[in-house]
Length: 481
Image (cartoon, rainbow, N blue to C red; front, side):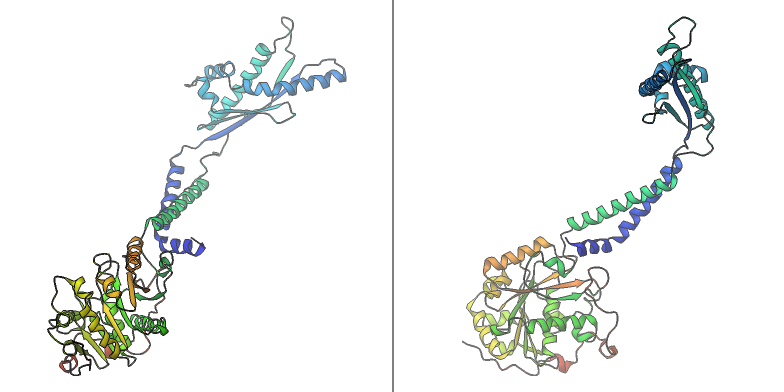
């Protein structure tokens, strides 16, 4: 994925990211306010070697000795030898090891200074522990570790408290702003991780760029999602100036320029699975092609679940299957639709053997004269992953155009449909993405306005006048046999 993909993922999942960011901020604040405040008190010790009346060289040697010993003294401060007297003096309810965890002793390099730092929830107690530890440490060093050479004499090492501990007035922790920021960063990171994980695990097709990972076939167009598609499926007729109707005209233009030197203009339109908008796409594309003055034949080749007759508002009792079994001639079965040169051949009675009928010689005899008369022939075929009908009829035509529904069709399903066509030796002409969102990162750039008034066209497309619905002009198509 490139930078644009990540930006699209963040844009698409911004609500989840924002929610987790707020949760992180709230969690950081809650954690900060539930922590008991801690105070730090410090004291400083000076370590020296007694050199009364000594020469200058002895003073230097004494200072060097003290520097060497200071490093070892730091480790002594956290031992029970030093801390047990502190616990007894202050009557603390703890052990030497537990108290040592609250005490930190450090010394700077090449110095004879020792800093003792105590952390506690009680500021006064922190100062008392620091001073008591310093006093106990001095006593242990001078009386136990560095005992005098003679009885009653002074220890050669002298520990001096140079900076007694003062009671702290402000806590050092918790750092509320820092904890809130850290919580927000953790929430933000979790939100981004969830967004990326959702994108990786989501195998559905959402926009045109998702198809680039599946096939190199051209993207013929995108059709916006219309929640009222069931009520007015023929949007090109019902609202010809709407953005969605224009998307079908864009598809028409792309189809007209698709391999113009190949001759045949018979196209099969199918999908990987059901409910992906193949039938409405076929019908609207046929209407859009007829608007240019071209002679168009719309054939319902879905002999299992036909929809074209219902969408077009015509009688579907006589149609393709009636012609294939020789019951009627094709010119008698074709029904003229609307004011342009658009003729519809419904499916007719549902047969028990759809694949065999579509792959029969009778189908060849039907298509040959139709291709001579019509400029375009569009065949609505069943989904490829359910039955083989689309692949069978696709071998007799220019090729197959696949529709894929945004947010519904999964990438493995579309890949499987493409492999089915490749295995059958059927040419895949391109892909049309339907049900594209009109807003958000996966939108196809539709405007929120229409060019010109549309009030005259806000009508149900199937409510044609009786004269329009009646097949008043028959196509002069000669059939063989």
